[in-house]
Image (cartoon, rainbow, N blue to C red; front, side, top):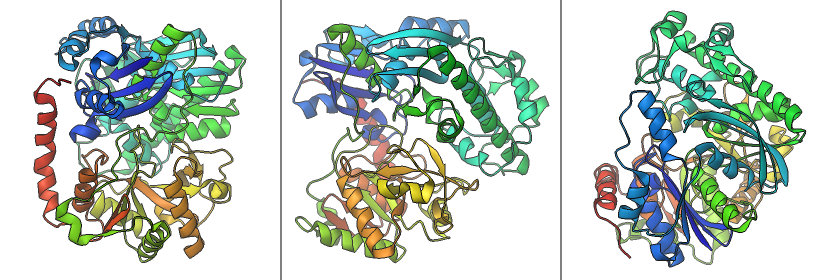
Length: 562
C-alpha cells in the first residue's frame, strides 16, 4: 500500500511517501525550491518522492492532507481574513495530477499521530502544542496501540504558541521563524519580568487555559495590541539594537512557557496514568523547554517528533491513513535521513579543486580532522539529507568547538546572523554523559543539557547549556567515524555542528546546493560525498542569489506530468 502525506498552503510545506507502513522518503518543499520555509503546495516534494520510488500519481493508493480545510476556512472567516488562494483538494487534483482517494485529517490529529505513532512507545501520553491548526491550539491525549483517548484541548483564540509568537513579534523577530531566536536570546537575560508576562494568561490550567485577550490582536499583522505595549514598552524595530530589557522579556517569556509546560505535564501524567510522553506541534521544537521537561518533569521517558512542526504533519497524516486502512501502526521512525542524496559526480566547474577519496575513507577523515584542528570551517554533505528543521550531519557545517573565537566567527562571517545565536554540538553517544550529563540518547537536537566542560566555548550558550546531538553510528556511520577520528587526534569527542546554509536560505539539499552554499558562506572546504572540494569558486555567491528564485519559479510554473 502506497500513501503520500502532504502539508502546505501555509508555511514549511512537505511531502512524505509511506510504502507498506514504512516512511521511505520525506522532504520539505523549500529544500528543493531554494525558498526557506516555502509554504506553497509541495509540488516539487511530491514529484521527488514519487520519482525516487519509480512511481507516478496513479500508483498512490491515497493522499493524506494534514488539516481540515473547512475548519481553517471557518477560523479565517471569523478573524476577518481572506480565504486561501488555493483549495487543497482542487490543487491536489489539478496540480499534482492525483485522481485517487483524498483524506483530510484534523490538524492536531496529524500532530498527535506524528508524535505517537512513530514513537518507540506502545502506550504514552501525547501533548501537541502550536500556534493554531483548525480550531485547536493544544491537545492532550492518552494513546495505546492505534487507539487514543482525548483528555482535553485548548481552542483558538487561546493559545500558548500564539502568546509566544506575539511577544516574538514585539521583540522585532518574524513570526513563525523568529521564535527560535527568542529562545536563544532568552539565555542572555534574567526572567525579571515573569510576573508581568503572567498577566497575559487569565487561566493557566491546561484543561481550561485562557489568555487575557486584551493584550492580543490575532487578526492583525503584529499579533499584539496596544495593551501589550503599555505593559512591556515600545516594541523593538526589526534589526534594531537589543537591550537588557529585550533580553529580560525573552528570558521571562521562555520561563513562562517552561513553567506552563511543566504544569501541563503534571496534569497530563495524573490524568493519563502513563509514564511516557510524546510531544508534537511547533512548540515542541523549543529544545530548552524540552530539556526542562526531561530534567524536572514527571515523565521519565519523552519522545519528541523530530519534525514536530507543520512539515512533519505530513508524516502524521500518512500514518492516520495507514491506520484507517489497515488497523495497524506504521513502522517507528529510526532516523530522519529521508531526503535527497548528494553523492555522485562533481560538477565540472569544481573538478580542478576537488580531490576524489573514493575507497579511501580513512584518508578523507584524516584530511578533514587536520583541517578542523587547524581552525578551518568545513561543509559536510554526505548521503540523504535530513527531514525536519535540524542539520544532523548530512548537510552540516563543522568546526572545532574548543576555539573561543569560533562562535563569533561563524555568526558574523559565515552564517551572517545575530551574535547571540548559539551553536550545537554533535558528540559520540558514549561520551555524551561525561560532557553534557546526557543520560539518554538525543539524536535529533531536541533537548538542551548542561555543558560540564569549560573547554567547549563555541557550543556553550550564555546560560551554560547546549542543544546536544548524540551520534550512535547506526544510521550516521560517516559522522560517527569522523568524531572518533577527531577524538583520537584531539582528545575531544565533540564537534560544532550547524546547518549548511546562510541566513535566509534553506539548508542545502543537492550537490549543487551544497557547493553554492559552501561558496556563499565562505567555507574553507567542503566534503561532498567522497570528494573534498578545497577551491570554492569566488563568483558563486552572486550566482546563488540569482539562481534560487529562478529555480523556485521554474519548479512551480508548470503542472507536473508523468
